[in-house]
Length: 385
Image 1 (cartoon, one colour):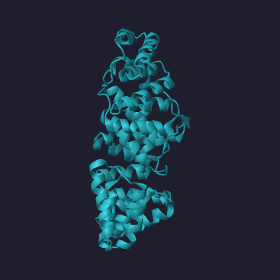
Image 2 (tube, rainbow, N blue to C red):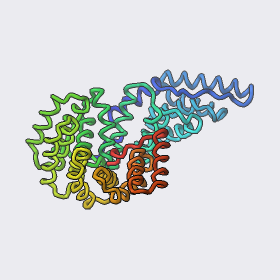
Image 3 (cartoon, rainbow, N blue to C red):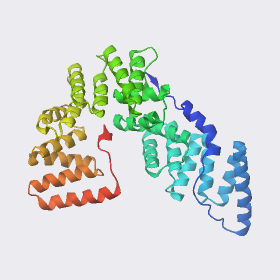
Image 4 (cartoon, one colour):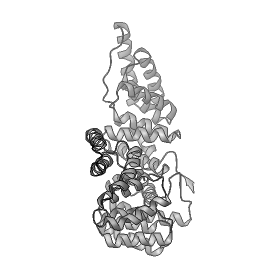
């Protein structure tokens, strides 16, 4: 397996464009005195002119002088960060963007750029945190910048084996018709549940199968189902024993509402790998509200195989609740609520189970939590796996 490159071609192109294309919506704060104000105005204007003329070394020096006079200049820190990023000085850029955040806490582009710097520095947990915060706040409406952020969000989720979240980020690139080799490789790794610390080695079986699956998954994400279906079918037919190949195809079929064929693919995956957890969870999920009793054995077996997967607790709790077994549902929903404290739907289900079990006070508490979270946030439980 080859490591993912620290700087993708997309990132390199972005570095050249950042200086001119991105700007901060932060306001300029005044300097301390009339004399300092005049010096600051001159330095900041000269710094911006040097940046716009691509005289990056000069721009850095001038921005630092201006910020020495007015360290509350959020736009200056942002511009210094973008110039440092364009010079591949990721540590210096990260320091600058960290100064922006307390001064302009709603500046989503600063969070995104800080995350990109941290990715290059190998600070992957912080990078994902800041890129997710950027997504919540919104980033500069520049297509190239947005694509770079989404690509790295996908890679960072792959590193943490959060395959669904990785797929959701990468799917947005596919909807933008981004079918380049790096995107399709990453998309294939997400579909096949391959952790994203490294890419398949050239000439390996993985280097053949993964991009084919990724291209099919990308087409599906762009809702080009008629093209995606034969591509999926062909690669499954060619490599029926490849790990998670039937799972990936089953997911596609489930998303196109071909439930019977989807379940068949999940069952084939379980035949290939009797210890498979996620195909069982997908079968259980398709049975929920349709035939919840039939889904329970799949969810129970998945939980036996992987008790640490909190989504399995949530799903089994829902299945028990739907079949009227409230006492069994409650402990699983309680575990899920602790694991996903910001997911309102879990608290709603828990409130319902507690109410039906006659635990009215606890039910009201869970309901209040649900109502509060519904206004504040909506954590995606499924994105955790």
